[in-house]
Length: 345
Image (cartoon, rainbow, N blue to C red):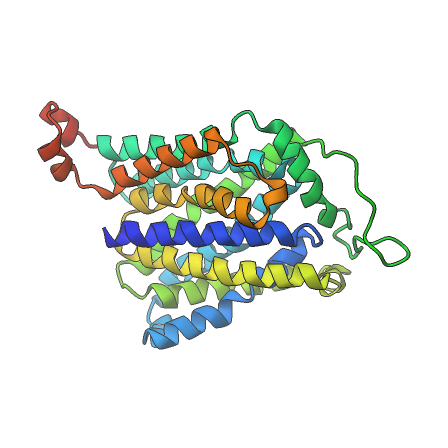
């Protein structure tokens, strides 16, 4: 239960992160977002590890476990985050959100193949509901995604080699034509992000190896991701571009960075004590929280209707199914015993 609760906390703070990030990309770019949200996690995780008395554990993991944690950080915080932001740029937040459940499929496949974890009927039902909820919310929203994407792409209009989204007089750039989602590029970017998001939980579980030193592990992951992104900044013009960030975008990216740190902290704590097949599906609730929070923070770019309510209800039922034990459900529901005893593989 504690692992599931931590996973829900992670999903909620991911929702705050996405809402803040969305405001930031109105005036900033993908590289500028990563340049703030990744490095900011290092001192925050260091502080959390220090307060939890885990700072010394960073040097007790061993080379193999440290390698797993470093790879997880690079795959998730640099690779996955970059392609996720690109997917939002190409086809808007709503349509890109529909691709993210594929990271769940990847994570579960890796968990079964590499960690020897098993799926039960109850977990399969919970997974189906958690994935189905976001799909209900995002289905049939191409027009809405187009409108929202126009605003999101305003910040990306500056080429990522250093341009700014302002006219020659220094004022705001004129409104762009209605955004037309680039589905091929968007879905390709979204699928590439799921590789990082799907594999990273497996690497985290392997790296932590039931040590419980989740905050020390998160510090290693964030540090490795920051160093890797530092190499990207060596490309001519990239550092100059990141330093030329708009102040408003910088503020929103900073807020996003703090919330994504909290989300990752809860995620590492959950993965230290709960199976990937429980934690990762529950984290799909982040799309539910993103829609709710974006409705409040980015009201002019979001919609809250019957599909949203239905999607939230379905996802919450899925999260509940993942938190319940098979034996407890067997006491409440009269079904053939094989339904509760079935395991795969």
